[in-house]
Length: 166
Image (cartoon, rainbow, N blue to C red; front, side, top):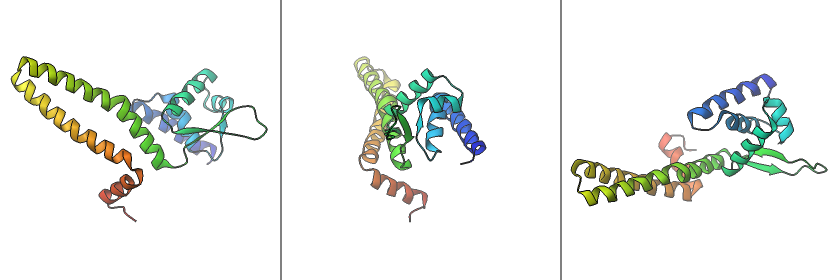
């Protein structure tokens, strides 16, 4: 990819990251790795994106926790090199799994706790709403677990639902 196109992609992806609750730096590092045909070391990333080495290190740690990048061995090199997960569908499912674990599961637990408290207090309309919320979240949780348990089937289902099946 030409340098100016890569820069535009990196900057755009970084800006979108903030809408998704991801730091701009993390999104920019991810974009650089995704849109490159080669692995990058920490120093190269810092220089290219004009961010500190410590910031890049933090970004790489975060991206590893999401399972969207991987370390690549370069023969004869002592430095660590990084590249993005090559399969964008695997990347998507890794992100969905982590978001479910980090965001949905705790929210689901809070609804359960609030519902238990509301039942103890017999709090009318609030109790009804919380019961509906728990039912809805149970459906979403079951659906999420099923989608995330079989990536190939989920991909086929998504393609079918969008009318883009092969």
